Length: 332
Image (cartoon, rainbow, N blue to C red):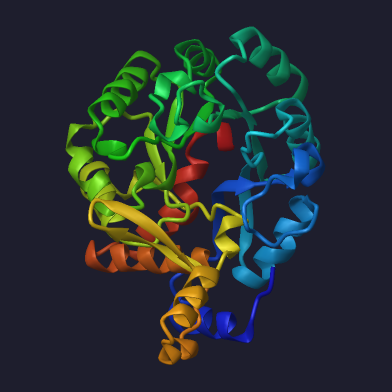
């Protein structure tokens, strides 16, 4: 992954004075490509082994002179050997203060199997993902088909976190998604449900339109990862308060160049590659002077916009970047 002088200039000019000195990154992927067949990875230019040392090295450039802790889990891929990936994560965080780990689960992993892994490897939470659902296409999968009630019930007994990336076209505005989240949160109050990507608020209106139907249970949180428009953040702060918003980078997705933008009632990823392809196809030479920065910077910029518009204090911003996560027992 290439970090340019222009990236550094953008950070200094726009973000340096906004980002606090202490960071808890609630959404970090670590992995070894050998655990995936045919190197089944998205278009992210990383080495074969994306471990904690590599993460630290990249973050020293990305957020220089900051103290960083993190919640880590594997990169979900259909071809992934989940067992090997989970053991890899556990070995990575072992004896590394400030680093915590979630166990990647598929819906066919029983509570008994999770208990065994937790006892051996000390996982503090669970990470589910729609790719492991039997529902086709998985992007339309109901939550309960990739995060079972049995799994949530176990997390409840151990006060574990659950990072939940909801899907379906309407995301948080989908009635079934809302029903399941509300039910899980109510019935299992000790399970901390972290709705990833601002409740999949890549199109802000899905979060804005759905959040009033989400009950204000104490165990519902949201992370900021890879969301590059501020509307979803503002809706969360308005309904739940800034104390429920957790900073997350989505590393290494954070280091893709581009951003995600709303398009009608959907969203599209505008990356450096498809940006350049569009420029060439349309002979739009004036685009050549435009250089996208990193998704992670775009996301922090969106968070800054929300903080300004919602009149957050310096202390509030410190809470989002660090204190809110550290107030969760599993991250202590």
